[in-house]
Amino acid sequence: MLPTNLPSLTIVSPCYNEEPMLPTSAPVLQNILERLILSHQVADDSKILFVDDGSQDQTWKLICELQQHNPIFTGLRFSRNYGQEAALMAGMQTAHRHSDLIITIDADLQDDPSLISAMVTQAQRGNDIVYGVRNDRSSDSWFKRTTANGFYWTMRKLGVNLVPNHSDFRLLTKRVVTALMQCHEDKPFLRGIIPQLGFPATKLYYKRQPRRAGVSKYPLRKMIRFALDGILSFSIAPIRAVLYAGTTICGGALLMLIWIMVQHLRGAVITGWSSIMASLWFLGGFQLIAISIIGEYVGRTFTEVKHRPRYIVQTDTYSTAFQSQSIALTIHQHTLS
Image (cartoon, rainbow, N blue to C red; front, side, top):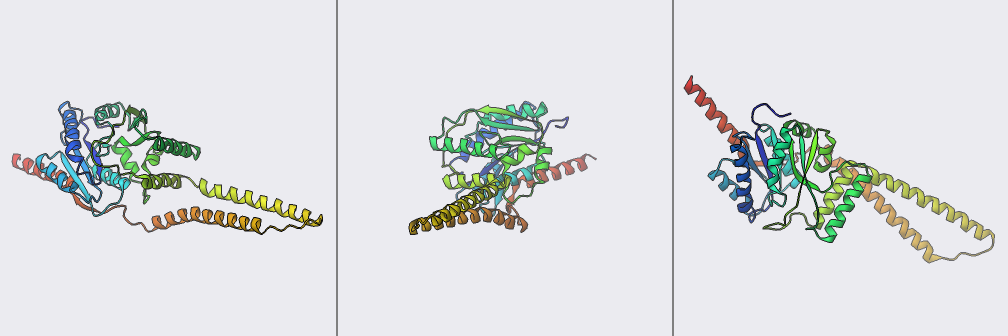
């Protein structure tokens, strides 16, 4: 539900080593937001918030320079690299104190930023969540396309309500972000949590563009870690699968034992060192896999119960900008009185 006056919008964009991309993406986002302000779709105090996720290049320096030239730009700087999910949560948590609408989009602008205006329109029509969804994956490699489809299929079979082909390009209203902040996981899987919140939602489709500069921040290792986070955060199916597999193997071992006894009673001598060793190796490997899966859940429980902060903000120019505006407004009102 939006306020009757113009809603304030914050565009949150996580950045990690985006020095090559920021000079291109920042003006694009600035033009879009300024058009929304001029057309009276959003309030004058709307902002662009870049979250520097512990970059090792000149990303933060560029963010500060952008803010010096135009106060529409603001920034958060982490003390170290915490990951994209943490950057998104930090940006939304900081912005929702002052904003009615929050749009998250990657700084590489592979997601279509021209969709932002349509997202605001959909929010004005009563949708609390607006998902940006890719209409095709033709720009991806065969491997990435196949693994992505396999991931969505697996999550659907596990009963997790995901929006296929949706990344982190979305609009959320203030009340959605307020509800989201009640989720205190150490590593929140936002693509699974947000659909579970249950607010009115819609989808807008677009074609993903190739990266204009820099390199992808999601190599194969991070993609695998991301997929595991999604599966292990929402389902205990892997543990149950281990239970079923263990039960099946035990049943097979019992049948084999009966067969061996029958052969022994018939006088057939079984000499099979290799078969025995193969069985031992198979069962040993299965036990290690089972322990590893259970260990993942135990490890996550251990991490959660420590209640350490998801991230540490070193510098916050977003909140400072609103504090300065509040002080200036107070002084102005005091002068008029």
